[in-house]
Length: 155
Image (cartoon, rainbow, N blue to C red; front, side, top):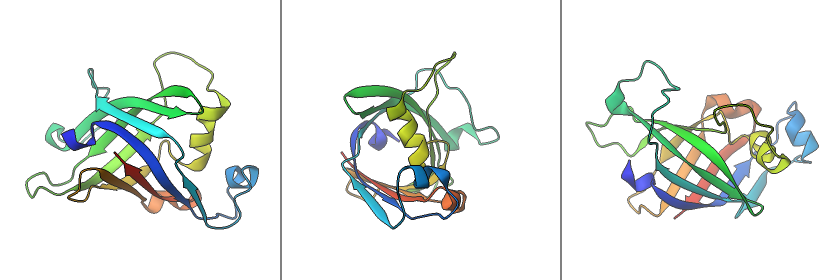
């Protein structure tokens, strides 16, 4: 998935309100919300695979890493991508963003914001239209309790 490698601006993040989500209460999200130009995600191939997702054939599974730049700081991230059908050249798959590093660390408030918004540890369907300068992440069924339903990236 070389088309994913590069620097992506998180142009729009769409959040639907969830009645029992304490993070949304804390962030005062009570109606449909669109956050614009939230941060930048830089993606590159992972030099050493971690294999967080077990059971997927290696030809369908890609691991990436990068940084999430927000508030003048960079936070390391890990990305797992499963492409269900490479034979047909499908341009969609399942992507998950992880915010961890080996060892112990105390995440900063800015980094925790992305967890509260639903960016981390959540499955998204990834689509890249024929124009490779746009990428969309759409929430799957798992996202219902978090509320983050769509993220649009611009390269």
